[in-house]
Length: 326
Image (tube, rainbow, N blue to C red):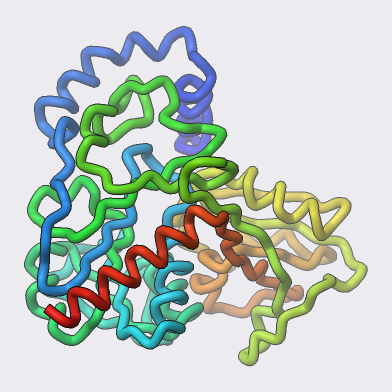
């Protein structure tokens, strides 16, 4: 609860011109000194195409859905694609691990397991991307890094920075005075900015719910319309309001409960829910590996790209095929 309150107040200060956030300015300079906030490694010519999808804002920019979209597109184009992630809030381990469908989210991370379950492609989790990359790159045509702009040691072919149309770069300040992990000047080494939301000049996309499926249904049969019941939306994400806004297009009324991002679900979290059916995100669904006494529906999402994003994908695809011939 305290963490939720802290995150809420920091986001309010960062993105709505807060009055007291300037008091954290001394800590911003400490962050600047001990981090690589001034630098993002530029792209370079590599034997295999390595695309970094990251952000300079902290949390909740819609990065992973875009990674999934790119991975699906590359897969449908006949390319052998892998997604590499550094797991969050799990115990560190040495080396790297190729995920399987039934791997434990508490060991390898919820976002990594969600991508594996949703796409069925190869997903690698590691705490050292720069060491892992040379060991696996020969097996794949294209490598997608979910996050990694701040990884000083990892080479890359393209730097894609994801931001949110409404939030942009907040007050433009570094952590903790602002939401940024890198200075605005570091964007000089970004190859493309991708926007979650509207843009008439940049690659942009929206994330929409295109149906629901029962968590207990192994076939994941998609329902375009939910049964007429009472619902409660339960989520653990950085900005749950985006999830709630998407749900409003499908359900007139629902209650909601939110937990910290990457929350480890336990049966006690659902103890007082008896009459409502539950709706969860795909990221939360992979962590629900215990029985729940009511129906649980998973909101299936898809990315809706604008023409600039489709053009960017075509550009990346051509580059990959050119690299294959070199």
